[in-house]
Image (cartoon, rainbow, N blue to C red; front, side, top):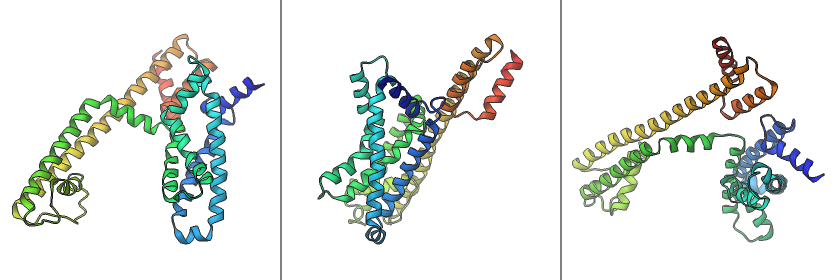
Length: 299
């Protein structure tokens, strides 16, 4: 009985695209609880609301934490099905030590700590609970897509960061040399000057610290221009990496459609595989149908 139940839970929690009929409702429920938890954590920080609805916040958190705890235990239990090549122990250990496993643990650990150690500072407990937003990675590939895009253009990205670091240290040193005598409090050291350089290079410009000498103002203008260029360069690299990744995914998806159409028809199993890949690659239904129709005409 345990194995069929384990397979069913695996289909619900891990195979959202073409798994168990409950997979989507459970996915929406857990994602909704994550968002609700974040809203409650934010509202708890309002002292007037926390004083008035303290028990309500507590019970809501306990219910959410209990559900996430059950989910965490179940994911450990079904981990061998996701990693069939590994032994059950190693598969479970890999999940527990994985990024997503650690996030799932952090999502419940703060509340458990607060329950067993009542004197614990609740401020950092609330702060850690905000990390639950990363649990949404179970249901969205956004973070994975970002990491993959940056990794694919890692050389260019590192070069741009290197250029940004040069601009940061150069502008910090020069502004310190030109402004330290005129503004000893604001530019008392190079690390102090780095604050001004960072907000200027990133085009934030709080205005709490600014150069007053003619040379300092000139350096400020040059730093702002360098900041626009370097930030635009980083943005362009990431945008280009995303575009390339989308093109690669479409090429892979198109190749899978061609393979499925090699015999002239798409079987039910091939259709399920394509729909699963479509969901994973975030390809719209209209785009999917258009690609199939176009390839059918070519075929």
